[in-house]
Amino acid sequence: MKRFYSITILLFTILTTSCNSDTESEGIFDDSNNVSSYEKEILELINNYRKDKGLPSLKLLAIIKTQTDKHTDYMIAKGEISHDNFGARSNYLQTNAQAKATAENVASGYSTATSVVNGWLNSDGHRKNIEGNYTHFHLTAKKSPVNKWYYTNIFIRKD
Image 1 (cartoon, one colour):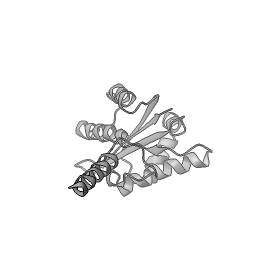
Image 2 (cartoon, rainbow, N blue to C red):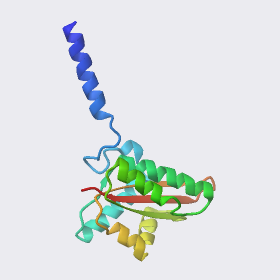
Image 3 (tube, rainbow, N blue to C red):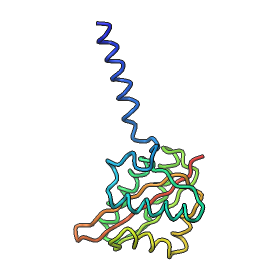
Image 4 (tube, rainbow, N blue to C red):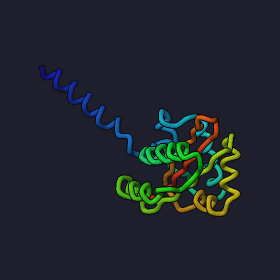
């Protein structure tokens, strides 16, 4: 009976410590079940750009993905890109991820990772977000029913 309780406690400990989806990734793609290979490519391009500029790499934070997913679905349903309701996403991340600052890049129509990142880098505001004083990020890239790509990339700073 003592062994049963020991095993039960061990399993409970493993389950409660390994299933927290709001934790930071140790490595950039530790939560790879939530990140497509296309999204990984975009995130790597952003971090490589930051590295080339002497800026620290950004870490993935799963809770950000909840917001990028919802907003990308919203843009697809609306049929256009927007920053509608960014204040609500920002407030959510401030409350639930202890974000001290937030920023968002959106896009649509680009069909390659390089083209969407270059599109952002060729825009002063989007480039400022990519180069900003942030510590974490996440991204959603999804195709609409008419095969048009939509993107939401959110950056946050945690202290």
